[in-house]
Structures are given as structure tokens and as C-alpha cells.
Length: 181
Image (cartoon, rainbow, N blue to C red; front, side):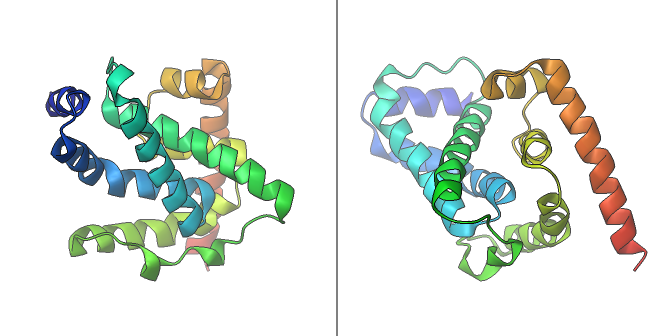
């Protein structure tokens, strides 16, 4: 309900409402983008690009569901576009490039939570094929439903569920092997 009110205010040109939307969703979207890309700088670019596009098009924007889910979908699509462009220019990204020191998360408690989450999942997620990693991150961090993921990736719901199931199985195997060391 708060998001709908803020979007309505943004449509009327209220900059404070746009700032509040940005501050409310920025950290979660940044975590999502980092989990998808394993690159803090690329993730920040994607999140900022999404908010700039949102601000430019807010006059014609109609919120039909969750604003957070919509923005997460936009971030995932932007990450995919940026990674595709980056792959054509350079070799694949390395997990080591993820640097917690360069994150600008303001809440210390949230930073601790994020650093622990990134530490545990970052290397395990990096070992997954991109298609499985993308579905898992959208489901876990983006809190998107399988149907919404399928629509955003333009694939069937059964394909999304399969990628999720196989990815989770691989993650369990990776994390179990790590805990056995």
C-alpha cells in the first residue's frame, strides 16, 4: 500500500517519494544484483540504471502487483543485458571481485547479514550454471513466484521449476561438501 502511494506521488512529480522508493528497495535490489552478477560495480550500475529508467517512465507506470517484484525483475533483466555485453568484451567474471568493502549499505545490522549471506552463497552460486543461478536468486532474493520468473525470462513455469530444483540440489551438494572440509 505504501508503494502504491509513493508511486502515485512520484507521478505527480514528488521527488521525495522517488527518494523514499529508492531508499526502501535499493539494498535488497543490490543484493539481488550482486548474487546474479558476482560483481559489485556491475550490480550497482544495474540498480542505478533501473531506478533512472523508473524515474523517467514513472508518469506512464501503472503498479499492478508488487513494486519490489517489478524492480527485481527489471534488475535481473538489466544484469542479464550487462553481463551479455560484458561477456562479448571480456572473459567471465571471478567471484573474488565481489568486495563487501565497496558496498554502501548504511545499516550495520544489514551489512552483517549481507556479508554472511554473500560469504556462504557467493562461491556456491558461482559454481552453478547461469540459468539455475538466475532462477534461484530471483526466487530467494527477489522473492518472485515461479510464474513471475517464467514471464520475466520468457520460459515455461515447468522450466523455471526444473532449473530451481536442479540448482538447489547442486547448491546442497556444494555446501555439504564445503561443510565436510
